[in-house]
Image (tube, rainbow over all chains, first blue to last red):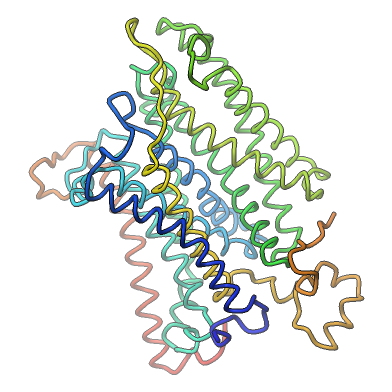
Amino acid sequence: MDSALIPKGVKRCPTWQFLLWIGAVSVVLLWGVLAMVLVYFKGLNQTNMNNAYGFALWIWADLGIIALGGGAFFTGFLRYIVGKDELKNIVNFAVLVGFYCYVSALMILGFDIGQPLRGWFIFWHANVHSMLTEVAFCLTAYLGVLTIEYVPMILENRQIDKVPFFHNLSHNMHEIMAVFAATGAFLSFFHQGSLGGVPGVMFGRPFGFREGIFVWPWTFFLFTWSAAACGPCFTILITKITETAARKKLVKDNVIELLAKISGWMLAAYITAKIIDTIYWATVTAPSKGFTFLDFYTNNPGSWYGLWILIAEIGLCGIVPAAILITDKGRKNQATLWLAVILAVVGVCLNRWVMILQVLAIPVLTFETWALYWPSWQEIATTLLPVALGTIAISISYRYLPIFPQELELNPPESPVAEAAEVEPEAEGAPVEEGPVGEPEPAEA
Amino acid sequence: MFPFNFEWIWDAGHMLFMGGLWYALSILGLGLTYCILKAAYDSSKGHGASHH
């Protein structure tokens, strides 16, 4: 039915199957829309936020999504500025994932500001001393960059590309994409950093407070670094999930391995810096504010915040994935690669949780107790709404746009010539569509 | 955001902060304008019939 819109030569599932999938995800989407309507009409009383938790699930989701969307800026930086040419085969998908991460982040911010009609105040009446103002500026401008990077992909749709103006526009945008990518890297560096700067400058919250350089606490640099390290892991993870769902290979192993290697070394460097930062904070910064290290992790009945969370964040979800990704053997083994990218993604989300929620849970005055928080269903539904939206949008983009440049080469059209080519050694990993339904492509070592 | 806003002050904070924003927005705006104008020009010359 929609075959005229599908990129030439590639194979997609039948329309009914695609619509069934979109329909299933739309159930979650509609649940989120219901909660969104409630929040917009009834206000923030639909949430479990209170005086202790001005920042809650939404802000964690925002920071997590933005960190994971960092794969777009860092892959673009590597491709266009550093010149890693192999990454041209995954940069489109990184941009696609990043675009929907940032759309989601801004959508959630739209819920969180309480009065969306006054959202423009932060731009018009900017407080130039606020890290969050910088975040708002860079976030919005960077979404503009991602839109500019995404538009050429849409214009390359089989039917749209037939219009000469759109064909030329897409071509011209590709020609100067390095300029846009460099601007995106500049904007991303500052907004990722400023998100980390927010807990870092809160001297009234010793769990988050850090020293630093000039106006930038160490958390500024750690947040940017962790986004650059873990964002590409999320890109790899979503690529792998897409390949599993499509039951075919979409990106060559050497491309994934290069991105994983860079990501692994970035993660190793980040986690080393994070360990040094944690030791200095535990032994110097926190004691200077009258706290011992264990004050932040013990004597908190009813809460989850034990020492385990630090071990999970730095050890299990930091050192382990870094150790896997920096080794050739770890990257080439599909099981360990999956494990590493999942741990890295969980790790960066855990870091954002700790720096947002645990900061607010810890008592800072002698008469205070640990403040506990559990999100309302409206908060959960509105957080899942952009996830469902992103899933649908990525599914539609994959179906109708030439997102993966190597797809055709890896999955040649079924023909006698192609079938003959399958026996050739260089055609390994290609013919996945022919496998049994529901069985993922075998892992390649 | 603009010098005509009542709270605007010509200090280093405003110049750096807003300078950075307008610098980034200018690059995006000029880049996009160039692409659109060149696409219109190329199309008028009959280019764009084949894939790049």
